[in-house]
Length: 256
Image (tube, rainbow, N blue to C red):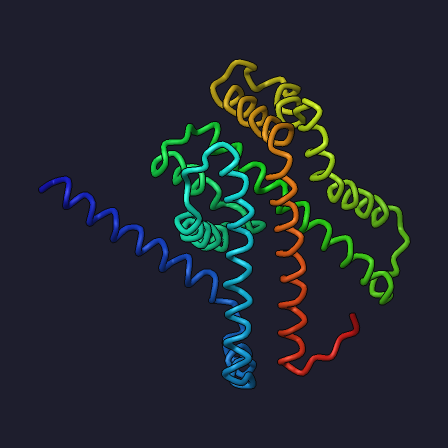
């Protein structure tokens, strides 16, 4: 009886937290303008945008599934799709960039299908590297478009250093994949170079093993890696296509 009461109290607490987070997200949102924009859309246009979003969720889950199936072929696709939607939900409410729900992916693989934490983490690490690869590629195209449009015309040194730092960040995902393929582990090396982090701490050993498994995936499952990369490219193209559809439906005419 006490356990059941504790479970219900935990659920109520989580509902309250979710309500607070929802209020925090929408408190500054221009709801009136959003409603006007929705009213200007035809029903079929809304249906098309929803369909495109569903396809995007399916593609990013397919990327993760291809990575997971390299060593665990018994794991089906549909359960991963459900948990990936939950991951996006958690990430949306997380401060900062759209990350934060990845521990759900690790816990799901560990508890539902019996994968070790390190192997599950390795699959999520590869999934995020490929996701960042495509996102940063889109960022490069965005920067090119911004400069061609003449939006940024600053030439001071601070701006130049910021731009150089951004370009270096864009190069990180492909360089990381190449290093993993050649048995170089940058995250492990970086953590090992930080003096106040114990070299034999459990978290350090966990990261070292997860990155080693990710490198093993790159070397021994090249077809899965290329397939996941191709799916990422499709997802990136679909994101651009979705934005083009939205601007077209809203009557905003932009050049390519």
